[in-house]
Length: 325
Length: 239
Ligand SMILES: Nc1ncnc2c1ncn2[C@@H]1O[C@H](COP(=O)(O)OP(=O)(O)OP(=O)(O)O)[C@@H](O)[C@H]1O
Ligand SMILES: [Mg+2]
Image (cartoon, rainbow over all chains, first blue to last red; front, side):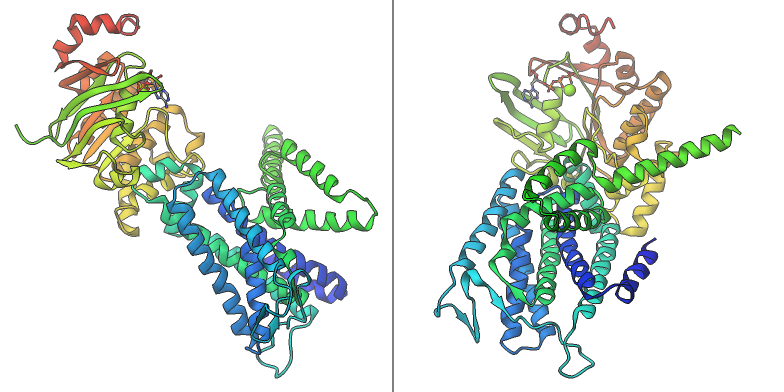
């Protein structure tokens, strides 16, 4: 199944033009972001609205470092490390402070907002890092794409970015799946099932929550770097509240208790949003809201778990038919 | 008499004006198998939860082998070797029986040794055929066994069992009594129970709680025939 999907995704560029590849790459990047949130929410049970903060941080750090004529691979690495460290510090204070789950969401949201406001306030000549002007509201244009290591002076073009984002998404997905099978991952699964029992067995859940938060921060940062590479642009909208809310929708639609669900949810909702936009429906947000409500009511666990339950029900029914005959 | 493994001094807990536990002095000798009984709402579960860091006491002290654990967090107490089966099954419903036990065993053992431990504990609770089944799909009695097995897999020094035979059939109850006696060979045990026959079959000493206080503490025959105990239990023991 996974192999088939991989082959299918890798074949897309031979059939579709750059515009399609460009759109799909964006979905891959956003799906990474959704993955980072659902890993936290679905397994550790904490709803972080700060994943966009890590996303934006990753994008900005990559842009600033790369535009200061550092090679882009190093810039990408620094772009991932910064949000990871930031997650570690933020997570430490939030988790060791033993604040409630609701406050966790509220504070991570506040952190995102603060970062957004701070970036918006950086217009003018005073805000320059190295050679790069931060430009406040307007963002930083002309962010370089990744250099191709084996070709001098060449950078990834649209098809290259497509392959890169597809590969990264698949790797991160597989990596997270594998993480869940390790001793550390099994405790995370345990936390999802029953936090009190995990504690009673002697595990200090705070270490595991922090580990998951940092890992999720790294994935969100990586998504941010890729987003900057993809669009050759970073702006304060990276930290957007709108997006912070939309990720929740993608994850809920796909099913937060799985890792594949949020990827599917992102693809579906982003495609739908774009399509609604081109259809001249004025109220895209309204339509999205209605859709979310419908989803929560119809499929409590999300699309993917519901689909697989349906499939196994059909299989059971078919088996009983065969047995009856 | 040897130093107590567990001791509480003037332990108290109030819930919005209700004294759930009222200045309890309790002491347990190492290796003992004690039964804790008392009518509904007597404070038995609250007492257990204070011993395991699930409820913070309002006053008094809890000592484990002389060490003050009154303010310790649940995971620290788990680490020190108190294992508890809560009244409402507290298991990982979405995981298989084997995965439940592995999570418990892995805390103290490396991978290979943990696998051996899981196999051994599975055999003890006779759940081997269920190893791959999701715990959420099991019958109530079996889920209780999974929880007991998880507690045992952690090799605790003190085991607290809150109504281990509740909702079990007669055969399951008998098997549970046997299991508790087995656990008692390696650990000190306190069990909350309502089933008088069950209590007689496992315990020698009984502590009776009533309205957050210790009413009687006696050997099993004396305690169960005590007038005061009969009075507070009326309506319950008849059943
Ligand atoms: N979390 C809570 N909040 C408020 N009151 C509580 C809470 N837990 C227990 N109580 C109250 O404390 C008292 C003791 O309850 P507890 O559950 O300890 O009794 P119990 O002896 O275990 O009873 P049972 O045999 O029914 O399990 C009861 O009056 C109960 O209503
Ligand atoms: Mg109780």
